Image 1 (cartoon, rainbow, N blue to C red):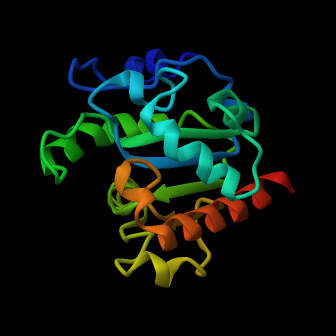
Image 2: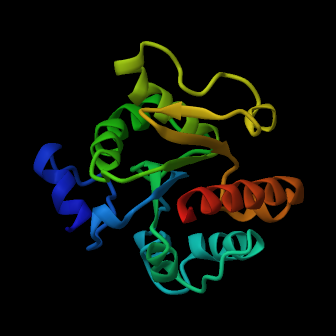
Amino acid sequence: MNIKQEIEKYVDENDQIYLNDIDIDPKLIKAIMINEVVPADPNNDFYGLEDAAYMETTIPLFQKAGIEVTNIQDILSYGIYLTNAIKIPKSETTISNDSIEKSLPYLEKELNLFPNVQVIMLMGDVAKKCFNRITKKSTKRNIVPAISTYKLRNTELYYQNIRIMPSYIMTGKNILIEKSKVRMAAEDLAIMYEIISD
């Protein structure tokens, strides 16, 4: 199945929106990692060029978690799908509410494509906010409480029998500076991998 084409069957095509234009079998995906926002250049995204900027921080994070990967195909082969919450590149340092509103229908449809997901990792506050907005429609409450990620990390959260794991952002130059967050994200990744490997 082509992810982009499948989403566009249900949600109108929009030139501003960047979707993952890849072919995968959604039934093989056991975990989804939701990053913050698409890069300005799609070649720098997870499924872009081999030396894409997003993979420069993502691959070392997996390796730090003890998961042997060298490229995006390795990650997919473990049943792990990477995507972005916000499908419109950001033009400022913060993400506008308009970008969130425009992106949510695409993200919601994307998440619904995968019937066998056991874990959803929310990589950063934007991913948490978007996931809460989507799930609140059916639960009438926030799945992820509005408290600091480090306080939530040892709490087991679930949505429809799927383990929800709030963690830290996995892309961008700042991640390399914040060593403690990298360490915690790698620990979270290792837990996710253990769950889907059982």
